[in-house]
Length: 338
Image (tube, rainbow, N blue to C red; front, top):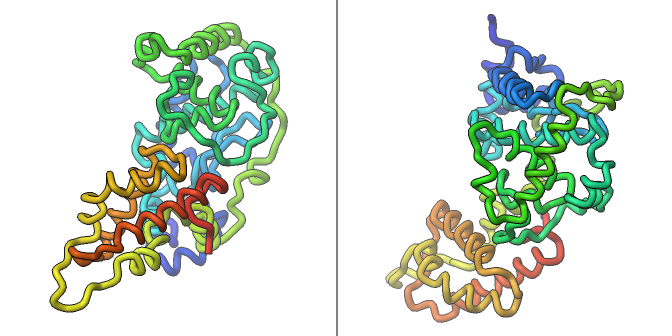
């Protein structure tokens, strides 16, 4: 099969294309075997509803619509390359990662297709699906009340996500979830999902509303617009977001001054900095430590250094990190967008 003309374009040219005009088809894409794998896994459990899958701008299931949207950049290798260059990562690019994500989305689809979230027992187990979704949550990493499936303790984000994560764990082939979660409160949720799925096995989905896939795919923009919006949304996680601040924190020492790499300095002073930041912000050490690691990685990329005898470096860095952490506590992001 001939490749579409946009495959040979450089990034600058490709970014001018509207996503919808790329002519992407899920059924002939590299991810279609994984969609079939999902259907096989559902059938192996006696579940007859296979959520329809469409090309979209991200991983999601529209509220009330039992259909799964898969990011367009997974549909073609050229678009995966662009995504990696633009955003440094490709969500769902490996088979294992893809299956974890699509099982999670299948949980949402089943919740809507069978109106599971309306059941009293569902609400008693997971909470009210109508709970306000602020897009920000403070996870408890060591909680045993939730399964661990996607990163960032995602089951704790919302009752809907708790169910979807629990469903995904339950569906995963070869996973002995009873043994994995033995002694956890989350085991009660898994056992409930097991019984719930047994109760609908072999039954067609009662709620399959008519819909137009293009009403939800969000593909009516150019690639450059898509990436501008995406970077704006995630900019505090984007590697160069802190560059100007880091250059101020670690100015180039004068000639002849003994210096060390700023990344090394951050690693050596990690405990001191956490001791300065955590008591005043009441933030957990693991989150501050993770953030310091991110800053260190970026300092290494920028080649920043610090004078060995810089007596004010501790104060500068601890003040900066404290400011970011306090902002995080109130906004869900370490730093406001520019």
